[in-house]
Length: 232
Image (cartoon, rainbow, N blue to C red; front, side, top):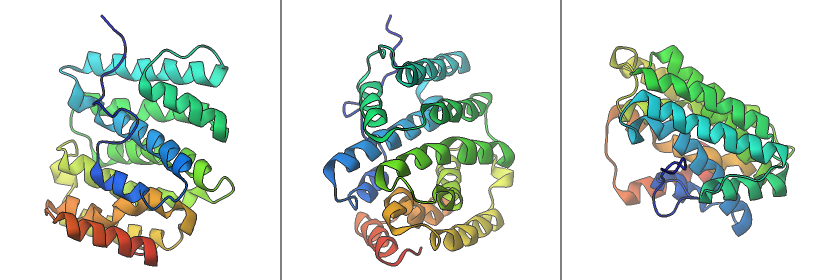
């Protein structure tokens, strides 16, 4: 039996079409591919609970990724998987902080215990997903202020967890959504233009939170507007 976690056919890009569309605003093809690999990794961490039948199997997957990233960090032979191979290349090209990525895995294990409280979900968002985004920012603008990504990324992650049914419904109502939206809207104004592709999915997070389905054209227009204006 292989220890390698299973991903879909195109394993070095995210499953989420909105994330892929957002990355199209990155002009440089190599940087775009590197960012997509990191965003694919972020989605793998977030979506492990949906890919396993019991918590123990999820724990094994998280441990597999910890060990793979440690091998990249230490310059050892990296266990093969298309995504781990891609991440090794990204790390070499952009001097990523591999220990930060290793540490970002741990908060995601909270998801294996069932539906998350808002506090637990914030840990997944701020100590997990946002940390991966901060490393992706090194690909686009190594000296940029990555702290500005935190608030928009938080709303994006929480909305995604909510629509996946992993967030406690009692703590994920309309009022919480409005508060998160207001914070994200203000936070987007502080994101450097070079890093905007990383948080453009926040432009449709309110729709996710409310359970509203938008047409493909509407989604594309909202992403374009957010990129051009820096606002949601």
